[in-house]
Amino acid sequence: MPKYVFGPVRSRRLGVSLGVNNVPYKNCSYSCIYCQLGKTINLSVERRYFYDWGEIVEDVKSFVQVFKPAFDYISFVPDGEPALDACIGREIEAIEREVGARIAILTNASILWIPDIAESLMEADLVSLKVDAVDERLWRFINRPHPELELGNVIDGMLKFSKRFKNTLITETMLIRDANTSLEHLEAVASLLKELNPAKAYIAVPVRPPAESFAKPATEEEVVKAYEIFSNTLGSEKVELLVSQEPPPEKVYGDPETWLVNTVSVHPLRYDYALRTLEKIVENPEELIESLVKKGLVTKVEFQKYTYVVRKHTT
Image 1 (cartoon, rainbow, N blue to C red):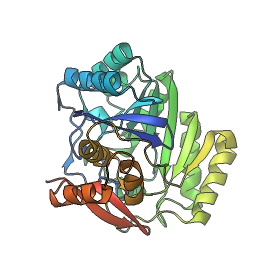
Image 2 (tube, helix red, strand yellow):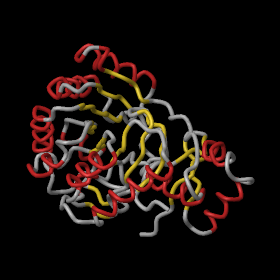
Image 3 (spheres, rainbow, N blue to C red):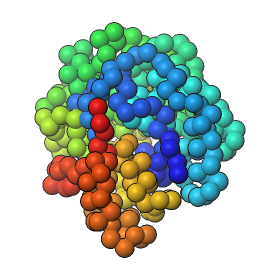
Image 4 (cartoon, rainbow, N blue to C red):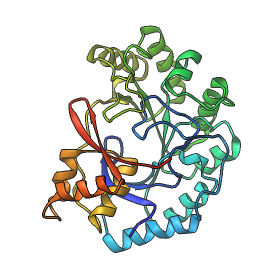
C-alpha cells in the first residue's frame, strides 16, 4: 500500500490531483491560523532529508502502474512545507522522467529567497505561491512565520522566483474575516500580484476546520471587494474565487482504510463526502470510519455546519 501517495482528489486549482506527502506532519516555516492540518509542531526553515527520495519516487511510480488513476497533476502538497524537503528537486526530476506526469508544487513561498531552494523548484510544471499579507503585522498574525523569516526577504524571493520560473505560476490569497480584507491592504496585495504576474490569482477562504477557531472565512462582501480590486489590477481573466468545497473523490484506490487515512492526513474530507466515496466499495462506511476513530487514526470535527474527517496525529 502507498506510504507517500494520497488521493487522487479533485482540486479547485489543479483538476484531479494525485498527492505526494514528502514532509512529515507539521514541519513548516509557517503556522497559519487557518491551516486545515492544525498548528505547526516543528516550526523550521532548515531543509532536511526527511525520507529516502528514491522510496518516494518508487511509491508514486508503483501507485500509478498498479491503479492507473486518471489525474491532471502529481502534486507535492504534504503535511508541511514541501520545499523543506532537501530532495524535492531530485523527486521532481525523477517523477517527470519515470512517470511522465506534470508536477505541481504548492508552497507557502517563505523560503524561496534561499537560492538553492528556489532552484530546486524550477523544473516543476506548476508552482503555487501563498500571498496572504504584505503588511508586517498582518503577516505575523495570519501566517505566524518562523522568527528567522523577514517579510522583505519573502517578498523579494517570490519576485525573483517569478521572473526566472518559465512554467505556470499561480498564487493563492486566503482571506480571513476582519483581518487582511481592508481596502488598503487588498490594493497592496494586488500590486504585488501584478509584479508576480501569475497565470491565475486565486482568492480563497477557509472551507475546512482551521488551526484557530477565530480564523473565520471572509464575508461575502469582503470577498467581492477583493475580487473587484484584484480584477481591476490584474484583469478579470486572471482572478478566480475558491470559496466552495471541491467535489468528493471519485473512487477509493486500494485498501479503503489506508486510502482514507492517507487522504485525510493532508486533505480533510467532509464526512458525507467520505461516506459517498466509501459506499462504492464497502458495505458499511460509517462502521469503517468509526473503527478508525476508535483506533485513534482519525477524528471528526465540526466546522461551518459540516462534519469533517481529519487525521488524528500524535505529537
